[in-house]
Figure (cartoon, rainbow, N blue to C red):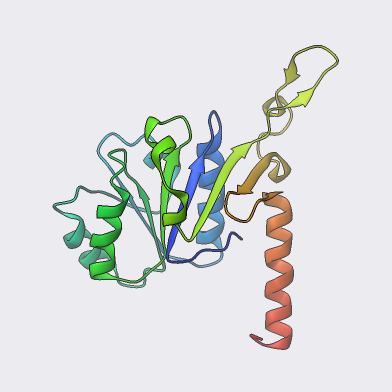
Length: 184
């Protein structure tokens, strides 16, 4: 789906960014990735994920990672303290698995993030609705809230946009070609 490297940033854009991020994470889980979701104490996003969740702080992070590394493929961090560099440094002391940091675009900390410190960076959001002739929109939630066409992704570094339906189709197509022709 989305290319993941060592240090990744997912920016959830309000108001429905949390649902888009959870759809992407659900897809990773569906294709067989085992995910550990690390969240700070007051994280509201933890209710959106279905897989292994652990509340953490900088003092117990090493211990949590050591106890949960068995068959783990991906680490996702939603830290409201926004101390990404310190958290990433601690994670790298224990493992070299890909790490996704999640942040809200409305947070004050987002404006101070240096995108160059991340290998990949994506903004995830839901389309605003169907425009009408007036200055209003009809929300797509009234028709079908799970349409993958409405869940949008924008790469900050590579400057492209797509929707989850197209990304899913591309992933399946690429996987079928790899299975048919080999890894190369």
